[in-house]
View 1 (cartoon, rainbow, N blue to C red):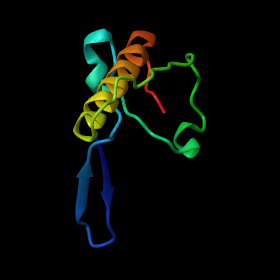
View 2 (cartoon, rainbow, N blue to C red):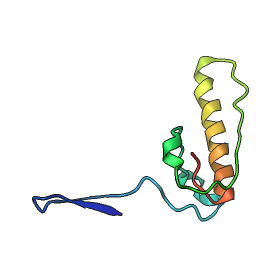
View 3 (spheres, rainbow, N blue to C red):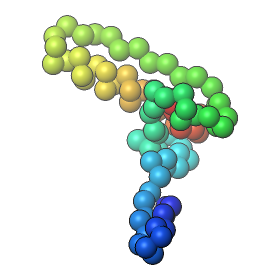
View 4 (tube, rainbow, N blue to C red):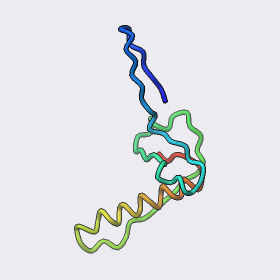
Length: 84
């Protein structure tokens, strides 16, 4: 948890979007980003990949994409890191 103290004395407390990933069960805490600036200064733990397949109708596209994102988060959690 971080805070900003303004000149007026007012404090604003906020939580970082990054949460601890200690095990595979913490895969929901994996943070996804598509911005290279988000990873500056971080150590790479490896690469993960998931492919979205099986789309036949428009409503199922989101389900397939959600499964692919879930798989990528699970792989990143197994590596013990945050995925960008």
